[in-house]
Length: 161
Image (cartoon, rainbow, N blue to C red; front, side, top):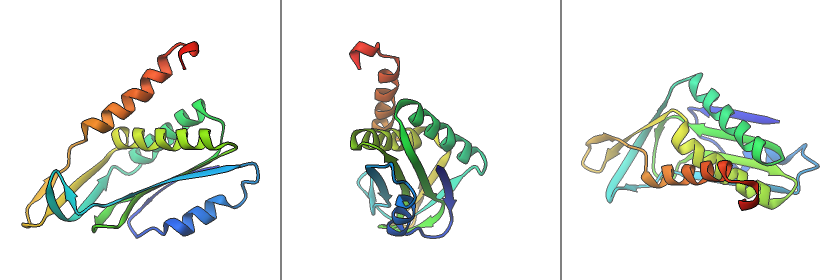
């Protein structure tokens, strides 16, 4: 039902979506998020990026995020694929696919998963800038705010949801 893949090789988002869609006859909606490497960050030109992770810990963190999503919405399946290793601008970095019976559940769960992934999964990004210098990328405040918004809805009274 759920799949987590950490890949060092390129991923094919279209093929992954097609494979994920098959065998889910109860799903009325499939929502996906594809994150791409940009050639700019913090107003600096970026030539390349290297993504690192902590094997074992990363998969456990992603599984926990998926379980949290399944606790909120009735889902027919989830697939999270994340690249590690060297990346170039326009390369796919992360693919989140969510199948549900209804589109609202699928959209919300997909957004929830990527918001939590950005702050809770142990990935580290090192960028190579246009001048050849390298820097580690810190988490964005907006990612933390997005996750905090979900945490607030979890603790809100049922009538307020």
